[in-house]
Length: 223
Image (cartoon, rainbow, N blue to C red; front, side, top):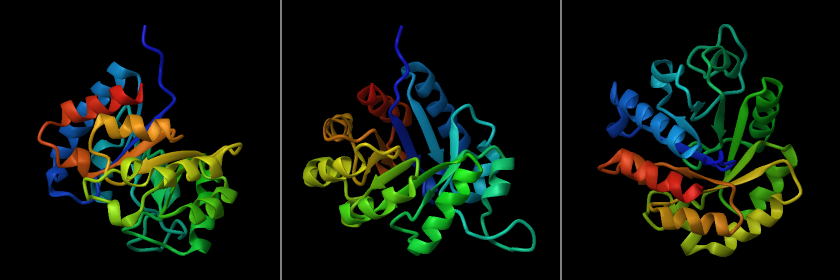
């Protein structure tokens, strides 16, 4: 029997058209099957307005961004407490396409901790890994901005970056995720060899012609 992998597989759907409308439901169903087959923990961040369509999924649903605002009269903001009531399990924080201040990051990591929700802080370099690991988030995802969506994997282009980031989170409760340009199972294996405990992927999966094939390839590489 296949053992359950402790590695984390996060798919950020961004606002890609490929995932729009009810296509997100088809995508989630494929991810659920793959997760079950390979016993890999898959988490998906759908476009914010589609969260309600998929929140009851058997895999983790994460927000792409949250705001440090209170429940109540706060129009247009994404409130963690309400996300939790909708069965959302956590959120990305400070993605390179939605950077926020270090003060906000600190408050949001603390807020998610209080709510027992998963926090994934996105960073661009090792200096930021060292800075934000002190906040004790669940995960830190390292993604050099210049490699995001490039098709060039950070694990191949900048292997020393992953190795140094892995060293920076060693002996802490925070796990490292590798992001930016991961497009094959080979990229995933390389990221794990360098010390990553999982991956954060977007266009490499969402824009693929065969979702089942590519998600399966990544999941197999994780186990």
